[in-house]
Length: 447
Image (tube, rainbow, N blue to C red; front, top):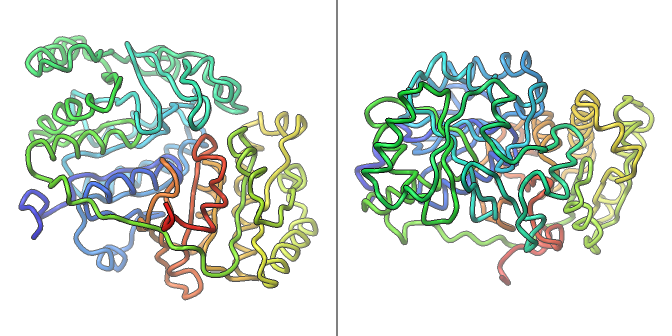
């Protein structure tokens, strides 16, 4: 029997600024026991009917890789649709590493679009996600260098401080977001143990009329306090919240404390081994993804020339598609990845080139699936994932299970029989253990 709390309209509507992060939020909501579906574009009425009654409705996008004008074109229709849903919480889902810049993925520009329709005075920005080993203490962001690695301040992170498009050279998120046009106040975790003091401090901060309030996340226990602060205000006035999947984690933690969600209500989802050959595609390689590619011993590995893909060489693209399709039709697993060399890093330091590479990877995936249909694919890279799925005629994703923290396997919903039911793994550059591509083949039934 469904709790009465979950009857009626969605409690959460979220937009993911890239597809990998959006699938993590989909997983978070589903595992909390919420009926959840992620749409890959604005849903049509028939798709909403097919989805049924939802507690959590998401839309995946690519705002993280867009300039401010592209952001406006992307987000204005989404914000109009969400305002019609009347969900108590609208969540603008961003990466837990906050990588963004004034010219690319500008969070301040995005917020101004959302605020035109959701003008709540308290705009919480949730600053960490402990299950991914991302923490915010006294407004400074920390992140693990890799799975199981040392936690470092984000401006000393070996990958994020040197990100080719959005380098994180400032750990104080108030200053980082200030560069993007936001005045951000900070609320720090020592106050969380006293709900009355917590609420009073929020009101003190709001007296200065900041654009948003950044909330520390030092440990898992902080999430319920954050969820309470968000939900008690959302039920009085529809509320916009910003942050990683920890926004949904916080709400679910608070709802469980109140007895509105049962502790044992979360579905137990295991992943079976792949049925037949698997195709995996990795865009520009982060060190974590490069390590995973190196450990993918069960695949034929094919190096892609990023510069030729960006240049749009049709003959090169057709030849690569033919090589991949031949391998898949022969029953072999194939992993196509761009080479992590200095020339590529220089190329991709240009935001436009990085976006063109991601779009070219999308066309590559579409053409491979047309030439050699498979039942399971994996895509690595936030921007690559976003543009790859935009190239396919898929309208939605539902959650199947987690291959690794922050890495979900999803089921595609599509009109085309060849795509409906396709199993898709999307992963960000920093996500997953070294054996991730092998787990994509083997599943999780064996643990």
